[in-house]
Length: 327
Image (cartoon, rainbow, N blue to C red):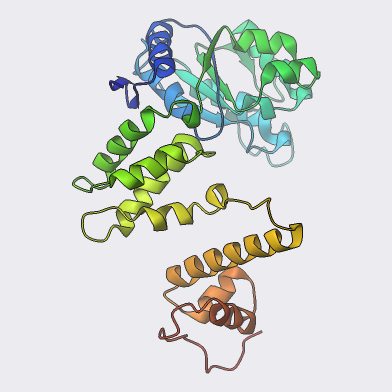
């Protein structure tokens, strides 16, 4: 398929092209946008490109991740707080909405916001004004809102886990990002795109290309990008070493065997995990046993056993082999 793009986002698949057309149109407006898609599909990048293609492009683009902020801090971080409004509020603080004045705020993983906090967000969207925690005055804000979720918010609304009024307020324009496995024809284009970014001049064999197209990419474009970045770091000569790169994506490509007895399948999986973990750990610590054991929080004796069990580079000098045990 022919490569098409919206800013830095590329794709040639029909669904992607339709999405690009919608994004071009929407970016020019002030409409609130809800981006729906699995983890790793590039929702934040899309939000940022909507901002970059909008009349607000010279204003701030503020990212607020609803999933990673402790719930007791969400309101003060979103709306700001006044000095003394709670223990630890030693100064006045502007919230993310005020920071985004004149620009765009991106509310990532909006589906993670606790339902009892949702009314205060709804109020801000309705009034186009924020009230800091501990204050009783509203200040006007001029902010465009783009939200994203990897959940099915309509299902959450049906389960009463997400407010219906807030959903309709956010989903004025709904943009649905297809997962990578549903746009297989884009995989070769994306690989080329990432190869050009990470290792121009590298060549991906036809066989490797076929394997990559067949892979189910549970981590979506982010996973593909990581694989190509890792492969270009591991590249021996000019050909990408995909075997290594895909193996390091351990979890998604573990290939769980359901044709084996449970115990045996689990045993295999644990071994794959251990080998993977120890190999990576020792490589990062340049085979220094003490440092590796400290980071992994296991004792050196156990780590040494694992290294022997998986025959990891017996020639390497295991530093600390002869020191008295710490701890």
